[in-house]
Image (tube, rainbow, N blue to C red; front, side):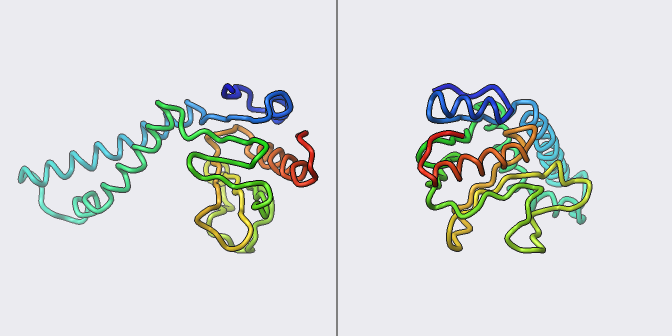
Length: 184
C-alpha cells in the first residue's frame, strides 16, 4: 500500500474503499520549515554555551536558559528532522482503527474525534488556542474511551492542509466502521 499523495477527503475516501487503508505521510514543506526553525534555535543555544565555556561570556540568564532548554530543542529538532527526511510517523487509517507511529486505537475504542472547530470535551481546554495562532497549532485528536489520555492520538496540521476536512473524514469513517460498513 502506498502513501496517499492527495490531501482531500475524496482522495482519502477513494483510497480507503479501493485498498482498505489510507496512509498519510507528513507534508515535507511544513516539516522542513519546522526542522530549519528548531535547528537554528538549537545551533544558537550550542553557540551560546560554547561561548560561555570558552570564557567569552558570563553565566547570565540566557546561557542558563540555553543549557536548560537544550534537551527540548534537541528533541524537537530530532522529531521534525525525522518527519522531514524519513517521512515518519505515517498516519494509517484502516479497517482495524487509526495508527500514528506506534500508537494504535481500534474503532470500538475511539470515543470521539475532535477537530479544531469542534467543541472539546472541556470548555476551557488549554490545548486549543483561540487566537490568531490557532491555524498554526491546529490538530485532530482521536480520543479513546475512558480516561486514557496517554493513548490519545494527536494528528497535527503537518498531515493535511485542511485539518477540519481530515477531522470530518475521520469522523465519517469512524461512524461507518461502527455501523459495520467499509465505506468512507
